[in-house]
Image (cartoon, rainbow, N blue to C red; front, side, top):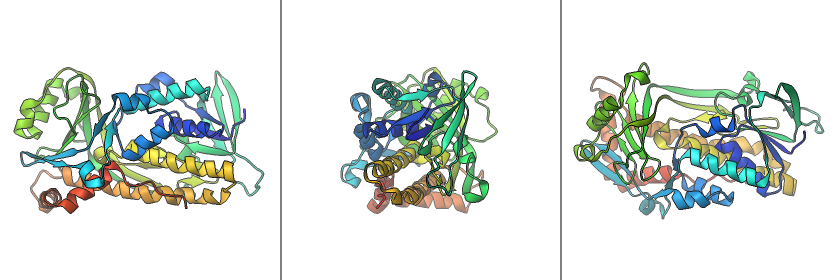
Length: 398
């Protein structure tokens, strides 16, 4: 098999990259180790930055998002038994976010790829890229994989590693050629999905002495709630009744009274970490999304950062194939990392300001309280939150 761009991973970043490239006539093949049904079954984020919304429209896959998604022009912070609204649109010149589940984004991208006849090979085992770096300018990389018990080879010009934190792409780079930066947080998020109306029209990020809570949604009838829990907690120990009761404790009293409870559709616990690898490329391999970076979900940046990587790589490859601009290839990593570190900072800051780190009232606790009081009583502080939450501008390659 031959193609121009081999994409490892059929999550939203791999599918979005493939869709954008196909629309520019750049041939690509996607390899995915799981089944399509498994990929669609992942429960993930649902807040899309303005930049990602625009990119999905550019990719021609926004029809259902625009019809069913929920545009939000504000977000709320809750603390001291009150709520403060951050006017996203008013503070950013009209920019907003879109609440539309990652599962639905993936579904739309899958349908678009099927409609255009793009090649996606699911259940491809033992995927491994080769020949990524060579002194021979004529040498090209290739990817081997197993399908139906047979080993196959995919020759290509470039490899996009969109296969997540645990994927093969980053592990294919020699350890001495990259550096990893990581912070692991001493808690996780217990998430619950339920077919109940959201407690508010906009997301609520709540700081409480018992721990952080988040009120989110997937639609006007499906809610997603989160509680900060210790890393030794087990999902089985959290009945629906216990979850709802704890959530009510952490919300302002008036908000708690408005909460509609119901049976959970899914519950899970996710640990929190910040992670970045530098550089994000090795020869003709480009790392995209979670393969290169992880953010705590507090800033709603994970999927959106992947989209900004896709934007950079897509525009780079268009320049390469349409204008012969191979000089831009070394700029991929530095261009992506400018935006990534700013998003890492925002996610770390939001996490640090809103979560409980100690059982005791200490200096750090007082600093959290002072920070929240300042940013919510200052237009400059509120603007800082709004600008970052809707998403900073995409970086240019030139």
